Length: 223
Image 1 (cartoon, rainbow, N blue to C red):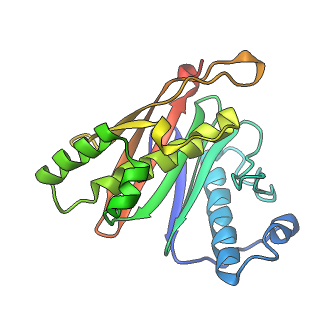
Image 2: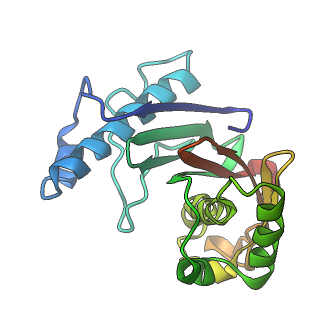
């Protein structure tokens, strides 16, 4: 995670100390598995918020983290954050909006994308990069790194713009040595005529089972 953020993670689902009524109502018709992961990532998010604000750790204890129309969590004023879940892995990251304009977090299984999926997700220059990286380090699913990076980028982009972002609109350059990436984004003018940044940076991490990425835009870098 980048400096100035606070994150919590777990494997499997938690039994939350508290389930807020409106959060319960938001997933009342969902499957039992979906309800468990929904409440788990929100329990992690509240732990992260307590860690982010040690001067007032109880400030967000009963703050509902409801999904918006597209499923993105609605964070308290002055906070940006992201949640993710993949199979048994769950995580949440938060930061103050004075530090970051946006942050996105994603987790995926460390598996190479099927060729037809890679064609949809990855641009031609990205597929060339993946081929080169695969020759250097064939044990790592580089196509999944690109896919996860684009997922985390979208999770940061959408709260800033309220707009959809297609895979082909984003060009990701992965740096294997530093475990970072850079992305070129389409020009976008948001509310109030504010132009969003056309570049976003991020970090990635691979384990035997997981690919984790986070994309972020500093408040000073948001135009």
